[in-house]
Image (cartoon, rainbow, N blue to C red; front, side):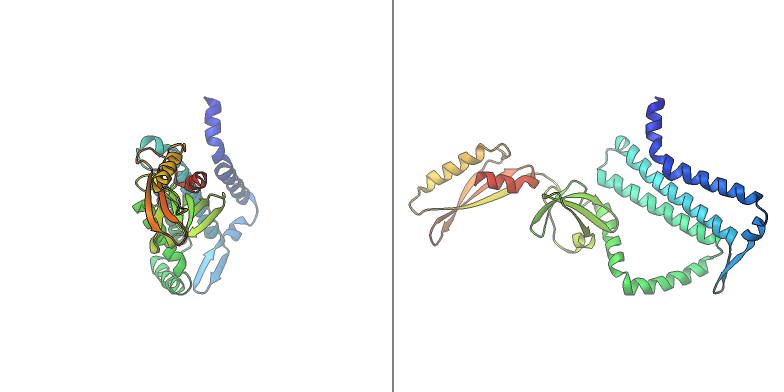
Length: 282
């Protein structure tokens, strides 16, 4: 039991306990050093704002504590909620992300309050930032809002198989700015979130993992169409990944310039392997 508790708390030791211990040691040293009180009262002037070094240190400590709390809260939600809530992983990830950002926002607000910035000053800063957002951060804000939409609507979830620009990939992670997908070549591609909200995206596993795989083929004019149909259907039924329900079907497309054109259509429940299935059938 003790070993298991140690294993569960070890990930929190380095990012939480060690920095807190360092802060306590520095604070204790500062209380005994001569001139530390005068140093804490020294001020830094930025325009009309004067900030003492003591308040600056306090604000940094508060901000750090909230950063740690945000990280710990996210880890706790990801560790404990899946076993308690019968919810999709994407929803739990959304809750963890929003909790983290909410704690960070509270920490930043309190830190600015310690530094003497009142809400009127924050409004002025926000007004200046809005100009910057309007000029240079449009893409960031658009991706941020798109990330919230994806997390709440659950139109895209980790594990989904999507077809993007003719390439089949699996969604690995959805954050508030970008989405990471993994291609069949095991390449990680980072895609801005607004691409998923502004452009049509094929989600092959949104409501069902069954997808239809077309296998176009052409045969000589001398071929027997019924034999072509029977042979293609038989080949499909012998493939381990091809589903029997719905069964494979063969459709005659028409007369080509030098061939009779058919389309063998099979269903699979592993969309990421559709290219391999098509190759095997050929």
